[in-house]
Image (cartoon, rainbow, N blue to C red; front, side):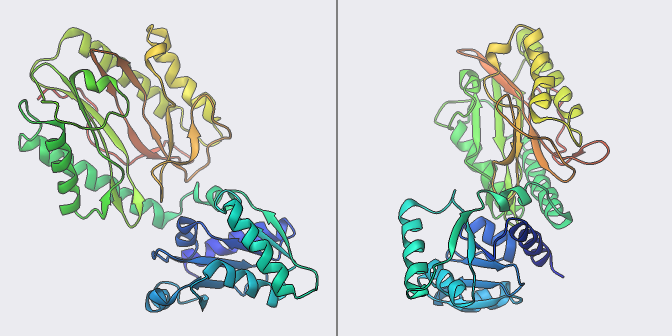
Length: 367
């Protein structure tokens, strides 16, 4: 049985537990997770009796045959409506749908299609499954973890090559460094950067999500690099902060503080750990040093087919960690007008110590 088929079976069991005859999956990333389909129009009807149905349009007939060979394919431009109508024809009485993905107008369309197809009979009931597939996606299987390892390895190698070649040097701009880092990841096999690469130098490094601009790198400045590679659709995420030229005492102090916080956060990653407690373990280190007000975001998040997915690790998070979750640990201290440090890794929660996927050294590098 393929990994996608096993994932559909897991959703099928969830549907049965909730008294559903089928689940209509419309979120494209969830469709990809459950089928392997990478096109821009696809939806999936997962039935509790096992007779699943994949929908797409004529542009993707050949692609669907190759990527979804084990599911019956329905070709119709009005993909979601066609699947809903077919669910009625095949006797579904209660259909789950992704309420976080379907718009108000989309829900009205579904209700009309179900009523029209029922032709005067009782239309099937629609019931939200909310983020049932996202809950599955939070725990990665072996194939997903291998894709994440490869994505992290590409990012590690790209940064190592740029540093070795002297590309991170005074006189260059943030934009130049960011574009070169992106290009290097692509040459090393990434499908795309995981997100818009963050390159922030000097005072800009105190802005957590600074967008690179024409600011010139200078001696004595922090240089913060937050980036990742996408491989097989899976995203890596890593941040390293270096100093150009000579590191001042205050820069070493802040760096060592964030490094200690990050180590505490990594150590707190354990099966059953509450995500709020994991955040607190790292945050307490920074608060104790008097910089609590300078750590302005959560400790981390899940990564996978999306760069930000469940679980969220922060003061407002909810739930506990489980084996197989891929998460980031990324504390930071940001001193407005001066500079900031963030250190971030991607890791896999295991029954033992977490597996570190981003292997670039976290020792303070002075270039």
